[in-house]
Image (cartoon, rainbow, N blue to C red; front, side, top):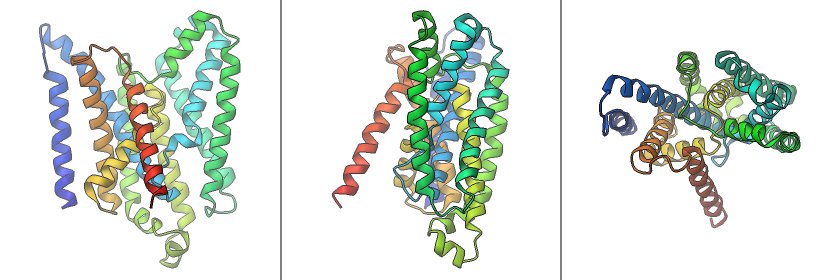
Length: 314
């Protein structure tokens, strides 16, 4: 049953992609299709990476309310943009080579995440909550520092920071899509390879160790995959914190299956479908009167509150 729903979800995503590409297509068709295809690739890559990473992170944390952004990815990204603008100026920031900037930001995000995981995991992976709380505190610290630095900017430079800090799919450099696609394929392949171990890890550390699983090694490897997926997607378009929560929650509700071999692809497909459908509505119906990331964050925040209230009433 879960496999059939996964196939249906795949076909639904293909339908949404076709609708995004060909809806109200006019001349010059080749030029417009090229622009839409680049944007579609970015939407699918970011949605798939975020959805898959969130399912893995929630399994490791044993909590379906959490997302990888909780450990401070978005705060570090905003802080990085602020420091670059503060140091180089608005003109210098805009003049940076996109490829070099993307690689530096992705490496910085992943390096910071792995440093956090490595320091906290020296005594084993039994204290996931300590890691999450440390990430939350670091995120608050980075947001505070970014806010202080932004007060030192003039209005034009502050506008540059604001634009760079909000996820946007309208100006993605096509040269970066190949790098992001390669990273996503490798990340999803590693995630599927870890899927059987994640099924056992979901039982809890003690039970997993009794069953012969090297729980600590699996957790650290899985967190590395999460860090890579989130770092690449964030460096590509910016942070979309609650997208993963939406994708993972819908995947669990649709499949009702504990196996990660189907949950991970379902969350990836669902994340891509949310972004493609949302961008199509904004462009074709609303005339780009708002930013997609803002609405995704709003919907994800409402879902988060609903899940919290549902748990409290049980």
